[in-house]
Image (tube, rainbow, N blue to C red; front, side):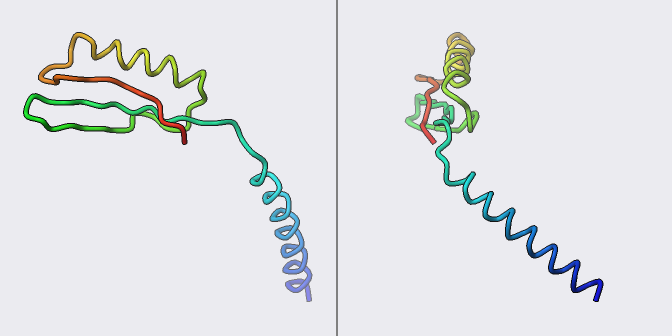
Amino acid sequence: MKKTVIAGVLAVVLAVAGVFSTNVAAQPGAQTFAVAVHISYPDGFEYDGIVARGLSASDAVPMIVECNQSHKWGAGSAVRFYCYAIPE
């Protein structure tokens, strides 16, 4: 009897939580961005990789600037190097 009551209460709690989580998930959130890097090498090989994900615009811009500046002088054998934002 006690297990049945606990199971019933748990079912009601989970159902209510599911209704509220659906409402939260359905609301639009702020736009997020991923920051990626592109590297081109003299032999024609090119590489694109994600540096960070889930950034707001105000966080993505400084990261792109820092990423581009950090590789301005030390790109090594890379012919072309730049960082850019991708809307998620």
